[in-house]
Image 1 (cartoon, rainbow, N blue to C red):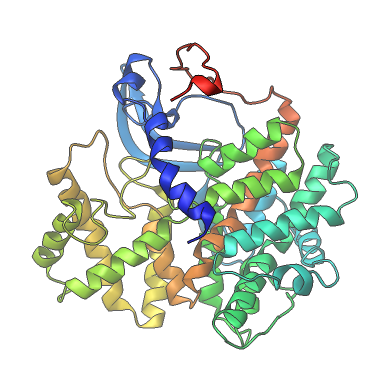
Image 2 (image 1 turned 180 degrees about the vertical axis):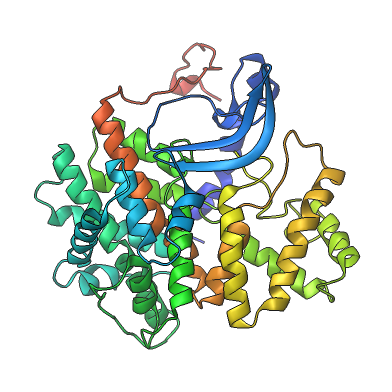
Length: 449
């Protein structure tokens, strides 16, 4: 153990002691922890035209839980997906909508796709000199390093004009799949001693298709796989200004910082287990359930084990059924509702019907178990990440790429919010913190105990 490690161990308790705040003080001073009230309603900190999330309706002054709804620039995500049933490039269509405020016509979408394709590239030797240096299983950190390094190649990195920020945003949207996949391949080669291969993106393919093409040794994928990934990315690309990483983007943007720094900050937020790592926790929980439940059709056996999880007697003993419930939604997560049919199609094509049955049973039983064991202020329903990890696993996407894939989708939402923050030209975001400090008399060094 190093001197620094020993020192940190010795002094850590002092940090705990001086940082401990009595929870009752939050109520006394009217502080909304996590910027949410006791009913889970977020504190209004800004305005946006980009998206809208609905989970409650006001009736006679009372908030009534309702089925969730997610609108991108006013359009229901369910309608966007339904309207694109026979086409690919759903993600690109959604990206155009979020950035420019309206659904593209055929000419606009074709031009936008061409711009994206042209920018699916990295500076000369960037993969070798940046991505392949110090590879790590933490692909999010690898990507963040790459994002910050890309800034040094941009002569106009500090130009905050909307034209320049839009250029930077489109470049990042275009190259994010490469940063993620190449980062994984570098790690897999150097740390796992697997074969190394770098596939160039195909300009005729969608972002979803290129992600699968670059990831797989043979570059092959099915039409259904590409479609399901396209839908998953659309559903993850934006979720209001209040989620942690998007709010981080707006906070950093409000300070006047550059695009690369703002997106790197959002990446650092998203990698947290409470945010972008949700589907990883679902997968770990499902591994545990599969090893303890013998009959996937036995509802009593499944419910009994879920009860053990909620009572902190099983799995990670935190009392959480991961993938159930959401900070905003109550009765239903609209993303999960529309996504489930695609999950079922993929499971059928992959011969994973038995696993799909287990997921469906848990989806139905978990809310009842939670309601019986816990006092909850709103409904509990599965969220989109209850199924997303299962989908990625069926596609052979390694778990190290689950959160980076979230980032590949969410970069568009971050970009739209950064641009909106700049256009609005609001003040620097600086919330207040109530101080509990009391003034003390200074004691000279020689007189201190």
